Length: 202
Length: 438
Image 1 (cartoon, each protein chain N blue to C red):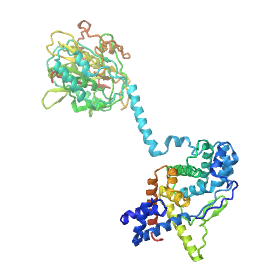
Image 2 (image 1 turned 30 degrees about the vertical axis):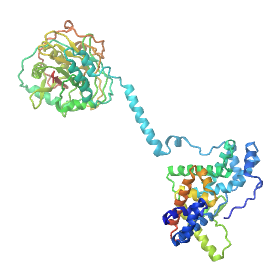
Image 3 (image 1 turned 90 degrees about the horizontal axis):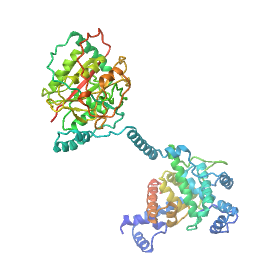
Image 4 (image 1 turned 90 degrees about the vertical axis):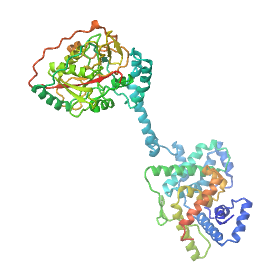
């Protein structure tokens, strides 16, 4: 799995320590947490919302909430688990906010993503396969992303947390506030739905 | 495990989330099952594809934006008042609708004064001659028969009840003069537009509670009982006597709209009819009966020039010789004379004015009269009707004391007056005869 490289300072400091310093009032520690996890937060929010501005807003709001609630974070789970929990909940609220206003959420990977820096196409993680295989894989991932975008949100959530963030079922259960068994069955159903959606591609 | 069971575990197997025992079982199955191998390969490809989904760089100045939001005190998920009130629509709107309906019901109940006595209670207290069994029946039947009593929406006007010693009159001839016919036609025209009569639902409830049946012609009064609206009655009373006048509904009797219903308790309805015809004809009015299949008259209409209504009611009550009991407007039965040859009781209505001109085109001076037995209290307020009419002043509600014979003014029959050439307004009264013991 390709990860966006972390070049931010204080990367060597553990999340736990940063959280502790943040709770002690160290503003720089909070900044370090934001810089370290902003991409993860955003890349959880974006596939759920499929809208750049909304994903950015949700990710930023998640950190605002972290800042305000860090005093109550007892460290029962990893910071990332807590952060993802906040992001997922904010993204759910944002989606509800859309649904109330009749906004449809569909996406096509053929459409470039609007960012403040201009248009950018969805970038598939680089691979070391031969060019032909790389092209085929890129096409597969592009199709997969489009099909995932049309899955129910509850399926997208578990698939993203499992395969994008490589979270254990236990952590996913914490993030989604459900049981491990529910996570297991939901992931199985999500994959089955995705398998059927990708019937011609597999 | 068979293939379907294995396949349900394959997803967790791909993620390495199966306990060792199940994992071994799955692996053993997969080795010999090409179908499950294929399924496993698909799931792995999907998982890898999801993991390889493109990632986007967050917006530049992300941290600055977070800091700005923190500094500005922004709260995630800020909701405006519309969100608070109406969203989600499918949750809040139904709740709010139910709450609003409940508030309206409560408000209606609070605004409407309670009926102080239910009909059966009043009657049970006042029917001295009723047997315990009858009282029990009344207690049981009355509420059961009137379950559809509408929520009262009208302030019950105090009841004026008039009691007069009356005598049984002979049946009068029923020929109607041409003038009377012409008047009737005009009355029908105006009556079609006339305001509805007061509701006599309480009176009916009372009669039902008393084990009697109150019949109405055409069932119109029943409709009246279900209609709300109404105005405070315009009593014309003098202390000591009165008629009940809650104006509480609008009734359309086809062409005929009685504006007042007088409930008379009598064993012989024909006597009442004959008396009413006699009095009405003497005042230039007429009587129209509504015959039942049995031939008994339970309800009939009296059409009168509006200005004669008061005189009619006075004389109508006067003609009954020996009423032993009179059902006051509240349903209280007041014993008057010791020899009830023909037990006649009447709850008459008082004149009211100023009702809402709903149907419009009502000739000015139209008198709307309502009678009902709804005030509820024993010994309801009585107001002298004749003096009321003369005074024509706002309603007087008087503490009810049983009528005494001495207090009853003897009202001679008015000499018949020539009908106006074209009476502008007529009033239709309904007389309901309640037969005891039914």
